[in-house]
Length: 543
Image 1 (cartoon, rainbow, N blue to C red):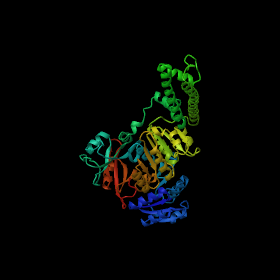
Image 2: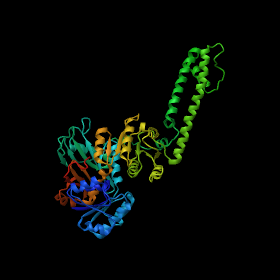
Image 3: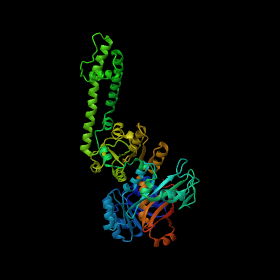
Image 4: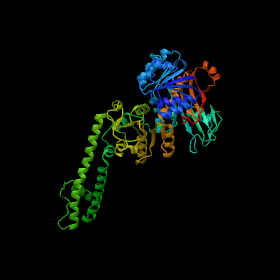
């Protein structure tokens, strides 16, 4: 087939490259292009025209009437909509796919304006970031009817529960269907036989309902079943643990030192004045608080050293009380300001920190909230376009996440994961390195990296849990939606472009004749099939 791609940003470039290596003819229309991308696409066979795709005459001269599909993938929603509408009016038979951020607008455009598919890169990528934060690799998600389905990749290790199990046993236990297997000797098998036994080093891809996929990983362990009591406890800003965690580190260290001094003083007065432990502690407390009831005193006959030590206790005690009041006051005022600003407080544990609340970060937070996981957002700009919306649903902290103090405010020590989704690879990498060094529990670290090749190097070299390119995740679905009518999702794996279709029972045999393979049969709804297209360049966009 012959396709046209308008806009050569991150999404347009990756879709064009994938289409070329899938065997499609590609025409690119763009105002500007990175020189290295232009060279690579021309070398792969693309025709590139420089100009504004909103100019109808220019669009026609670039070959609009010769293409089967068109993808409008600029970074501006209105531009993409205008190009898609013009293309459909000038060439009614062309299949159009437009990139748009607003998912609600996307649905209206599809139903009312005749655009075949409207997709948001951030919406396609967010589930992958969330699943990576909890130990899975979600290859694709899609809606089948009103239900959300997904494809998940599982790598079998010596400690994995799938080791030594047959495909049939795995399907029965998980409620998922085996889509593909890759054995340790790199042999691929689509819709593997039920008696295939998985061994160490094998990989299996499973497809099925989202609820069954979530049961595979660690996500349910971190999602608290929210009762009225747990909800009240979560929104209680004045618990001892919150007061302590919200206090500045220097004040906490000073208070611990002063409390240690008080315990030491208790021991000294016990032996020097012949007091019981309770009386000695009572005397220290009454001294440091300057209460001094007079029932226990250091008499005139006491050694000079003991008198001097008592004076020291009085002075240090005053500092201890002042420090304690400072911590409590700071925590109460800070909590109150956070409540007034957001209505939400930072969770104590098992939350996910999302840094960078732009398009991808916003969608990632939405995905976490949908799954019942508490996110905490961090953004450098207090007036970001999504900040107001997110503040009504979750705790949001304004500041630079490359500073330990900001991560501490987000309770990074007890967080389940941190996802860095800013638009700067360097910032994301810096945040990931800092988060890895922070004390506390072992937390998963997932980074957004624009260049998928660099992402692979980062993940393998620095050993992060995920380094993912949003454009790489979204590109196959853009291409599948345009070039394969009726497709639900597309993804790339091991040199294959896999496209998932929903078919009725009556359509199954014709689909099989076109090379599709049955992978799931749902009584009353139909069947899912896949079409595997081998790529000319086997490593392109491969997870």
